[in-house]
Image (cartoon, rainbow, N blue to C red; front, side, top):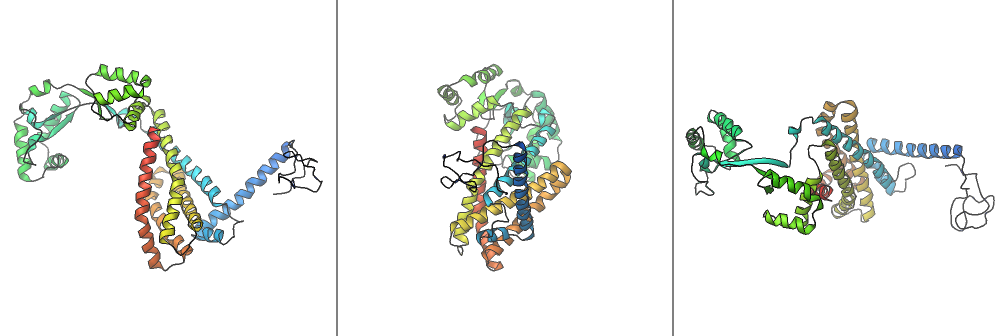
Length: 406
């Protein structure tokens, strides 16, 4: 950057007297410039900074794709002036990645036009067993693991269940098998025969159905017997203290802990059919995930130190970890950009290839940086992959839960 010619005689920071040739204060190091800066100078300085960064960014991206792993080795060898610093590079690319990911999630939410498409956490449901439909008492246990009388049917209305049972009586074996598998039963011809025989015995108008009543659930977990009880709870929950929430949880047979309290509060706060509420929730989760990546990079560096121990200094592995995560985000951002701005179908097609390219890029970078034979490089890559996947998935789950609850 050019030297600033707008100077002052006294340092504005520490009030040290300055000479005309002093570009920086000899006492505190602050740049010798007046606080009154013309607009022209601000614009020139902005463009100068931008194009300086732009040139470095272009050199960094060009070298990244042309020579996997080279920017890391160059950085560790002291050849740093031509590239964007690792942390600045990561922040810039990750910002673009999560911005595009948020835009894609918003688009996906906007595309869901019908409320019934949503996986609602508040629902009305009932269930009845096959034995109850036959006019008998409900069975909770049988020594025979293939006792089809234990099979339960979930339904939202009497009419919907009756229509389903009529369809089931003439359903093909594949449909019956799927139902049996869901109840952990064998799909043999004999079990299917027993099931069909009992279905045929169900009366057209079952008295058991008439005695059933709807129950109201929050997340399929917290049950309310009447709509009035549920609506009253929904309106008052915002003003409940932790003690009152705990009382509700205990009365519903649930543990009174922080997670369950947060679940109840959030289910009241968010309308799961409202697209804006869902966008707020998704963005909170994405923000939480972006923060966990700062944890993932030093953890990855530690794995590299333990497995690729030829480089004995931790910071060398940390620079590699920052670069490789940044490059992954860069590749993923390119695909997101294609999916959002060019073609959704083309973007979807590219995803499977994208993950393969990331893996190949990682192996090539490991080979270039750690200078080990191909066999050792691939073996150590596989050795590192398992703990990396376990840690990253664990952190992702924590981030999603925290993003929702916090």
